[in-house]
Image (cartoon, rainbow, N blue to C red; front, side, top):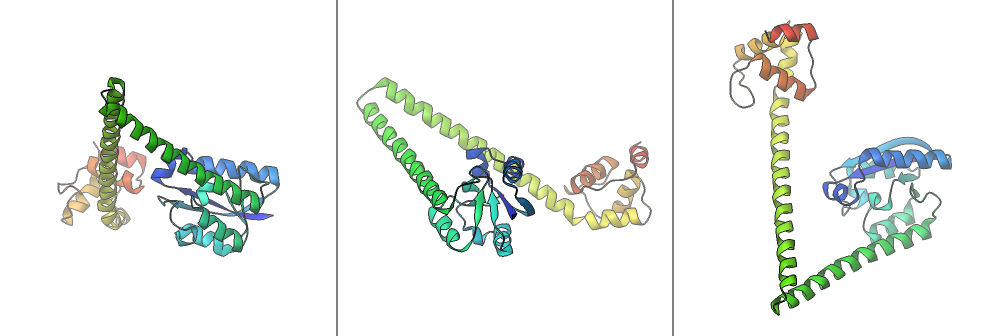
Length: 242
């Protein structure tokens, strides 16, 4: 049977399950070998929340439009919403690599139970926190310390998340700035700039500033070209830095 593999990762999803693209591919590959499936095509959505309906995601929509059965590594890679899954089951065939022999009814039951368990965990956590606050209000020093520890952990987590978001924004901005001059760099090399120094001189002659507004040097050219995935002859690159 020919199947279409679908993979999805989001920042939140990866943090909760640790299931990255490579791991998902391994799951699907193993299941395909065991079940005799032929993976005819692969689609992946990156940075897409599982809360978004599968038919509203770019790659997922294309996968379903293919018409052949879709296989995912785990059911939550398709969706975390039981309603989404139930609706898809009425119109499309799909398989789950971790439960390759499960039929539609079994997958539906699994999705319901998984959603119910997430709800129970959330309710138990909230109830435990309410009880802890009551004990703390009565002067229970252990409860007070636990609440304090929790607050510190949450604050630390938020700081780490904000720092990570800041770094990601900086990387994205650097990528965007570098992309703006990609064509010019390629044009310089096309016209004979065979070293980093020559590329720098070419950019300077065109009055193009570095991404940070400074003047080009072989080193800054090398950094930008690496970011863009551009390469020069190794010998020329070395000589250009001398």
